[in-house]
Image (tube, rainbow, N blue to C red; front, side, top):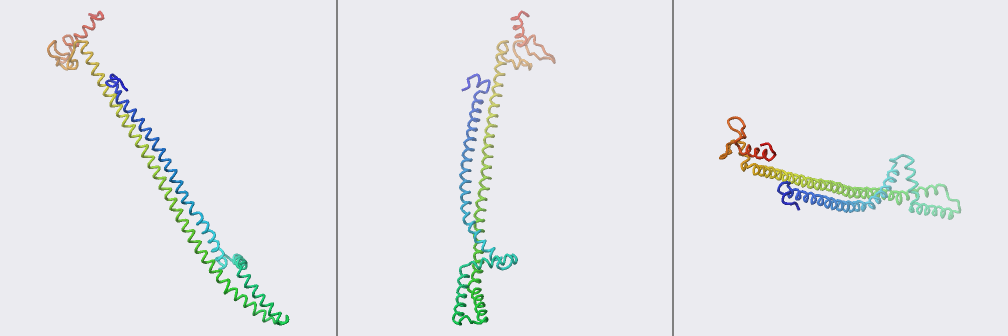
Length: 270
């Protein structure tokens, strides 16, 4: 705690108050920044988990979108080679193999009944039936299934993208809020320090003024000049007149002159 004279002449009380305010401002800044950092970390972790929750949906959309690629290839959109690749994929479906095997069994039975003398036209008719049956019962539903799967893939992909976009938007908003809150904390700390500096400066200025006034009072008492300030303005009154009179300085009859004479006598300059 500042002493009496430090408070009176050096602005000690104001300085101590300013230092206390600076310490509190520093504690406020550190505590606030720590709290903001912790909250921001928790918020980003939660939002990232929310974004990751859409990953399975996005992966499912990718799988269904592969059906769309096969569908487009089967339509011939991506060229002859791609169309042949789609046909190969169709031929690996269980329905294709079952239908074809049933038709071949029918041919074998026909030949067995005919004693292997069945005509070629009969085999051609059977082959045409196989092709027609495969197209109607297998190929058309297969293409429709590919188209439906492609549509579902698009829906899943869009839903996942929308959900993740919302999460990223929230992350951006959280980061912006975090930065603004940090700026506010730094600004509050700066304002407190500026106010503390002003408080200390005002106290020191008041102390300097008090010190000057005390010095003049002591000097006036030492030299027998209780009105030291007035002795320089021609208003000394009663014992000898002012130091400034008639356009020139004259200290011989003024309290200041008398005091200087006493001081000279003390040092042998009488």
